[in-house]
Image (cartoon, rainbow, N blue to C red):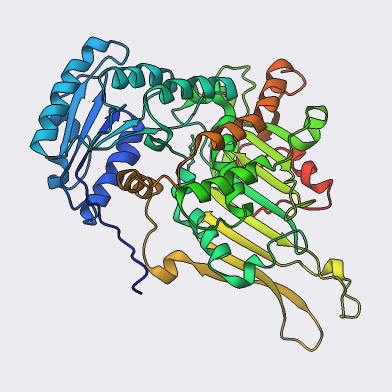
Length: 489
Ligand code: BG6
């Protein structure tokens, strides 16, 4: 169709400087994503990638860390800096200058901060001091990885440094969930179809469940996780973004500002969590030892790098309400955790029970309500659950699934979220990135919870759950008190 294209082409040459280039994110996500964009022939103009980190390494040593196309690797370079030593940036400047001439990138620059947050201020200050933030006939963009601070005030502090040198339109705060095809498809499902949006409200919908379940534990990130915990790691960003996508109003146009304004409007309508009855609406859990995928695994407190008396949460479940016309009185149940029964990210929208049963001996309440389940990963799919008659001489209702599975239909593996997001930074489209007010609202919602937990650790000791389960019993109580049940697919 002439109105649509699947592959935008990059028209401007550019250079990406990745700070934290010796780290995990660079080798696991950033370089593979850029390489994929290159081999898919989307990066049609010249470009280079300059890795920067503390470790000393040659260009060839840097290249040898990745399994990528040889032509692509020729465009990868490396230089080291000591982040908080301004004098060490001179070699970076020299190399940048050399590469910009060699690849004729017109000083179009992207700075990617894949470094721990405590390093952000030094890096940003130095970029600003060296004038690398300036845009004249070129662009200069900065990409910031989460965590954006550890509460509202530290996030604002970080913002102050960023905004001293970069304007909002130059800043790209990444929440990689927004880059997932399946998350964006919730928007297409809602706003590209007439039949669903009409029933997307409290007249038809009973409740919504949002889940990010991981079967992995903290892996090698215990140090990070011990200082962060699951609420900050998954709720402040991914969970609330998923909620905003499924519940937001349609923007008048899907451009960066209108789209983000609607998302923020939705987040602002979430009813603040009342500290008074926090225990009944937020459940904190931590995994003990157990069996995951047939393997015996240790408790969180026994993981290397975790304190033996740690009370950091690895699971959170919560109930939220959105105080607006569309969602009044519809509970949103959210849960996320490490070392759960399986890896699964999904949004399940449950419709109301039928108002009256016409079937003798089958009460309305005994007929399974309809549901639409967006499985974001793995087995990416959309399922509509509805009732049919089982072939037999009586009236026997059975619920079945009408399923659209991405892989079966399109026959392709879905691209990694970083591919889409890096491409958007290169193209200058910030729709799928977190705006400053977006980030502030989510911290405002969670700050009172974090404060309460911190001030009364004994009262909010996490409930233990066996690794490989669906979380603590208290999380079941949270939803079952309302006469509902978590999906445990
Ligand atoms: C990251 C969190 O943002 O998201 C991790 O820091 C988590 O703890 C990861 O494992 C989950 O991402 P995905 O795309 O694998 O669901």
